[in-house]
Amino acid sequence: MQSMSHLTEDQLNDFRATLEAERDSLDEELAEHGKSVGGDWQGNKGGLEGGEADPTDAADSIEELVTNVPLVEELEKRRKEIEAALKKMDKGAYGHCDVCGAEVPTDRLEANPAAATCVAHAR
View 1 (cartoon, rainbow, N blue to C red):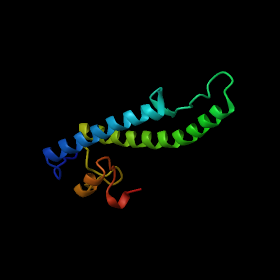
View 2 (view 1 turned 30 degrees about the vertical axis):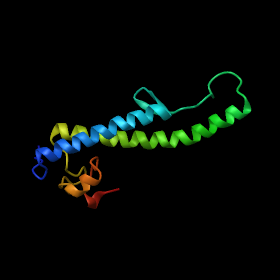
View 3 (view 1 turned 90 degrees about the horizontal axis):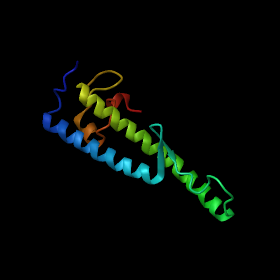
């Protein structure tokens, strides 16, 4: 188990609070634009389910779907990154690169507390 020596207890608590707040905010946004299906999020399909729809309503629903699906995918991806970072905190591995194990610079974590890699391995 690698220690998190380059991060103080206060820094870790701040990062955890930031990550949890962002996760809560993402949950709200996801609920607004999609629905959870078996742990995965899907874009709202508007009024496309069942029955004959007014063509204008159908067009609006398709437009909403086209907008919501990529948004929901992006929000879900970010939420998974946050969950991964929180799990790393619980295991004592937070702040270390997933690729090489090097310390992730504190300024990188401040910019993105869910950063899973050092700068050299950033995607």
